[in-house]
Length: 139
Image (tube, rainbow, N blue to C red):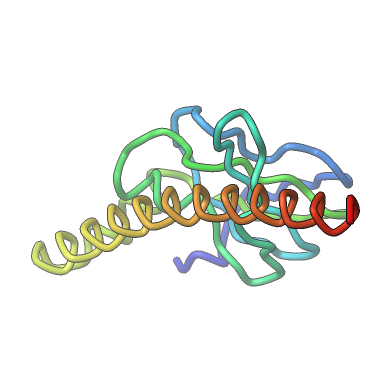
């Protein structure tokens, strides 16, 4: 059984929260139709990290690293997703050699760290643009 063969399908409308940052990870998801925005809270501000489309997967980092959700995911328009159950995912991962699993986990941990850093950089960039814009308006 591959990731696209999910027995559970969910539908969301524009603005619906699919995943909330900070909650425990139980499933990953594959977008069947539509698109979603991935956002992260940095200093009480929501920063757009990515927009995902049909065929993209999200929520996988928490399944591999067994940590809380690192970001929120919100529907943009109507969205249909397939739910990748933790048991299904674990079955697929268990088929990998031990050393490959260690490499995958290391990559996920580095990706999580990089996402944190990029979110902070994005917030600083937004602040800088605001300051520059205020100088342009006042002159």
